[in-house]
Image (cartoon, rainbow, N blue to C red; front, side, top):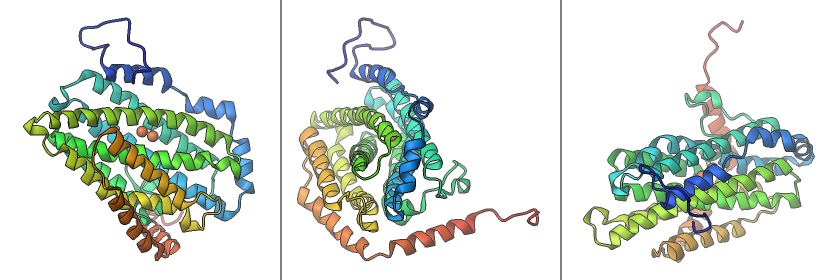
Length: 348
Ligand SMILES: [Fe+2]
Ligand SMILES: [Fe+2]
C-alpha cells in the first residue's frame, strides 16, 4: 500500500495514517468507475457482433466462465455487505473504524461487478436462463456452477463468513478471509480474469475486456486488504497471544478444503467443453499454483505443501473427467424447472 500518499490531514475519530484509511481513499479515487457510463461509452455492438460469429462451443465456453463470475460476484457482494462488514468491527481487529470504512468500498465495487456481469450477459449473450426467479435474493446458482463443484466454494464462503461474523473469533475470521480474499478473489477471480484477457485472440469483445480491466484493478485492492488482514492475525499468533493460536492452521486448512472445488472452475471453462478457445487447463492450473505459492508461502510465510495441492487437484480431475457434465447440467435445469411456480391462473 506504499504507493498511496500519506494524507495531509488529521482527524479525531478517523486515523488518516492508517493503511486501511489509505486503501479506503484509493478505493474512493479508483473504484468509482461507472458501469452505465462504460455501457454508453463503449456500447454493446461489437461484443454482440462477435458473439454471433462464435461457434456454439465457443459461446458455451465463454458463458461457463462468466457464469462462474456472475454467481461469485453476487455471493461476495452479499457476504461483504453483511458478514464482512460486521467482522471488520471485531475487537480482535482492534474495533478498527478504517477497516469498516474500507469494507464499504469493497461492497460497492462487488455490487458493480455483479451489475456489469448481469447486464452484459443479458444484453450480449441473450440465450441463457439464469433462474433468477427461484431465489428470494433474486437468483439461484447457474446450473453449470452448481453442477460442478464451484458452488461448494461459494457455499463454504457463506458458512465461514457467517460463523466469523457471529463469533468474531480470530481463527474463524482467518478462515473466512482465506476463503474469501485468497481463494475466491486471489485465485479464482484472477485465474478467470487472465483467461478473459486472452479472448481477443479468438473473440473480440471490447466491452467485456475493458470492464475486466476495471474489475481486476478493484480485485487487486480487495486482495491487498485480505492479505494485510491475514498478516495482522498471523503476527498476533506469532507474538504468542493465546486467542490467536490456530490462525495459521485455519488458513492452510481452508485452502485444502477449497482447492479441489477451485480446480473444478478451471475444468468447467476448459476441458469440460474440449476447450475451443484454447485456454488450456494445464496453464490454468499452473497459474493457480503460482498464485497459491505466492500468496500463501511467499507473502504470508506459511507452509503450504505444494505437492499435496497438486495431488488433490489431480485426484479431483480424474474424478470429474469421468462425469457426463451435460447430463449433470440437464438434471440441475430440470430440478430448477420443477421449482418454478405453478401457474395459478389456469393459464389465462
Ligand atoms: Fe468482484
Ligand atoms: Fe472482490
